[in-house]
Every structure is written in C-alpha cells, then in structure tokens.
Amino acid sequence: MTAKVELCHYANLWRDGDAAAGDRLFAELDCDLRRIAEARLFGERNFSLSAGELVNEAVIRLAGLDRIVWKSNAHILALASTIMRQVLLDHVRRKNSQKRWHEVVTLCTDVAHLEPNFELIALNMAMEELAEIDPQRADIVEMRYFGGMSLTSIGEVLGLSEATVKRRWVVTRAWLQDRLENS
Image (cartoon, rainbow, N blue to C red):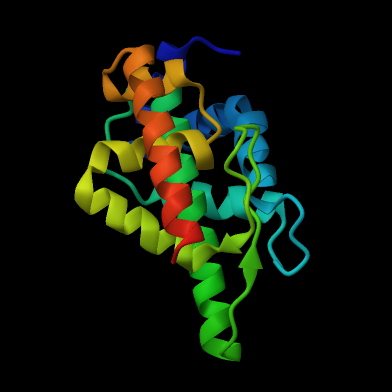
C-alpha cells in the first residue's frame, strides 16, 4: 500500500478537483472500504444494497466534503465508516417510511462481545445519546465498531494513546450494550 502521506496527498488533490488523484486514492483504499462495507452488510438478507453499492454511495458522499483536510489513512477510513453507517440508516429510514415497518439489522465486526441483533434506528438513537454525553467516546465507537479500526489507528485519529482508547472503548462498549438491551 502507498504510504499514508501519499494517500492524504491524493485525498487532498481529489478534494481540490483532481479526478485522477481520486481514482488512485480509491484504488489503494478499495480493499479496506469493501471490508468495512461487507462487515456492515454481513448476514443481512433484507438489504437491497450490495457492498459495492455501499462503497460507491460512501465515495459519492465523501466527494461532497470539499472543506476537509485529510490527515491520515485512518482519518479517511474513519470518515468513510461514519458515512457508510449514515447510508445504511438513510436506507432503513427510507424503507420504513414506505412500508411502515422496522427491519432488524445485524451489524457484525471482528470486535468481540458486541454482536447482538438490534434495530439500526435504536443503535443510532443510542449513538446520538452517547454523542451528547461524550462526543469522543461516540467517535471511538464509530471508528472501532463501524469502521473495524484498530485501537492504534483510533488513537492516531483522536490524538490519544492506545491504552486510553482501550479503556474508553471497554467502558463505552458496555454502556452501549446496556442501552441497546434495555431500550
């Protein structure tokens, strides 16, 4: 893979309108983006989105972010993961508004102990509550759970040590699981 500095360089050139830099950036990130998308959709039969469509929609939304300064590969993946969650949430809301029923979504990740079935809308409500209490902890959940990012990468994005991220992740994961089970 290209060095992180180069990926940021390509991302910033792409933001400024260089389509070739965008092509290069997403060619380098394709495997990571598809891994995130496939994890979001794993085991889902009721979604009409494929992993490729989810990646494409995320890239389209990333293209609309014309004021962001990309800092690292982890920063790009964290934001892509957040956008993918929003795409799925928009998809579920759109279906619910058309059919007036809720869809159970199973989000899977290689992170252990937080794999229950729950509604994406309930998860989003819990994430919004968490963001009001502690936005940084919500960012950790976003990057770890939805992006499958390592503790080291999350620490890099947030400017925290790996140990601090780990402590906050353990406590926040327990809080989130409690909220989802008792909502």
